[in-house]
Image (tube, rainbow, N blue to C red):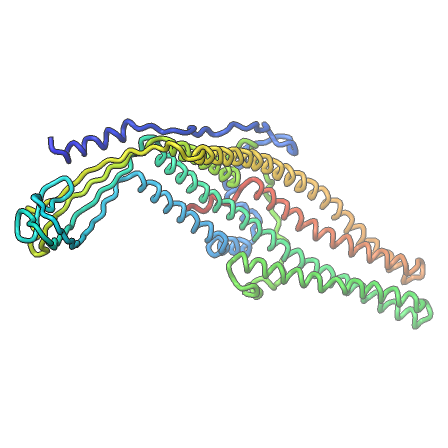
Length: 486
């Protein structure tokens, strides 16, 4: 049997009889509550409710902003670039376990000052040549050697170090994918929350302007009564003070509106003032008519991308322990060369063949404990990843419970504020009538107007709070990323 044929039969055998050292990955089992503490019962919610939760607000502008953010957000684009990088790194890891083939060409010239009976043959072989024929004579001789051929190299993965590297690369791809999902969940929530803040500030601005008109009417009425001798200068000063204090609220709401527009523009990958024309027209605060159903706690482990990312990071860390462990076992390398060799570049023919084969077996004997230290380091990183995974699960459960209680309590608060606004509006009407007839003091009017303004502001903030807490709930439940694939 020819040497090259024997070489070809040896390689698969070495590969097949290899083993994979290091721990095999097993997904850790974590305790999961049967239902959420803040709801009476948990039932699976419709997938569309989670996947496209922003559409439940029935706001075309919000839908458009969400779609544009998915397309143009810079952080999300960076996350997608990291996926491409991870996939490229996997190719590198796989290639490390495959034979490599390269071509080479060399030209050398050497001086021989002693006689030689042999030729200038290639390693292992055939194709001797010299200047002038078969043997080198006595004295100085200049020899030209021209070679051209192919080199093949292969590190046989006997103990699975390369396979563990590929395993880690696979996990890192999934880490990058889940990271992009986490970025997307955060992005969708940030766009919606900033949009709600914009509309809330616009509504607060409208409420303030309406109260200014009412307080201006009260100030005018007081001035008329003072001219008629029915009111004092003190009452005019009190009315003017309340009017000015209310007017002082306007710049804050205008500032809040503009800052929200700037934030949305940045989230869409645009200049801060780019969306001013689109968003400067006041709109009502979007609300959702759908009742948010919290999915089962066990489903959260499958839905939230940050949990899935942490689990994949644990898998990658586990594989790296195997990579480090394989370093303490023997390494087996095969090399082969085949080509042509001659003393004259013009005489290259198939007759001038040159080939060689070699194998190298190396094993660490003494390295001052560096290999074991690296194994210990990778094991510590694995333990850290396990703790991070457990922590991410606990934090996720907390965020859902927090969002559930905040959403529920905000709804209860909103009902009371609606009643408070209705009662305050009646109080303002009655106090003005009684003051106009001289049946009550001006202080009652001021108190009623101040109470109404406060109740109206709190109601607007509560309306925005309900929608904001609903967004926070959807975000805590890990919704939104399912609409985009990588």
